[in-house]
Image (cartoon, rainbow over all chains, first blue to last red; front, side, top):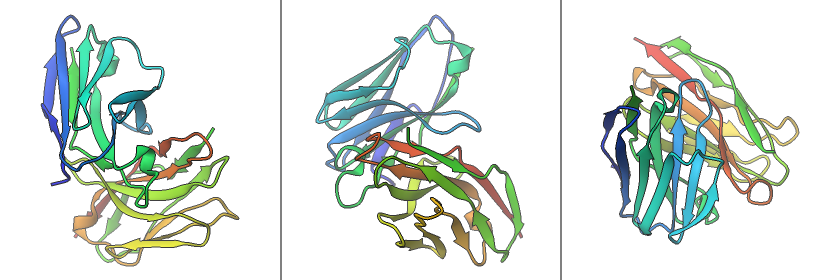
Length: 117
Length: 113
């Protein structure tokens, strides 16, 4: 149990669907992140939120839309995705942005495996 | 910009073999270096870290030394177990550089009995 929970664990959607991924952390952290994990590629940072404010959008297409209603919850809304968007989407949190505090540690959820048909 | 390069896998070893996974980095500032591990069906979790040159991070029998002169942070374990089978990610956090956490592509390790 890492303290970061992601739902759903698996999602299959068509290119015209709208779906959302949810992330929840009860660690009292201030920063939350979305990463994309594709086979044989480095983890791609997508979005960063610090104290509920988006601080970084790493040139992510607009078909991915993040939402952070409070410091414990993070959503990734998906709309008109492409098959190449199929990947494992990881949520992470840290006490301070990018581990600026003492531990420098990110805490990851188990990921949501997305398949776009 | 900052980047991390780690050896491609997959790596397959027999139980009790010696493990080395190479990692080199480029950074403009003074990065902290990390190894994360991802067990099957799980998210990444921190394995060890080092925050300055010549520091050695260690955990669960794994070690890595921050070598500024060679810009490296190689992961080693003297005797691997089947339970060490996982994907290992090298990463850096450079608050004075890109202000980002950069990960390598991951190295899959399989340990056979």
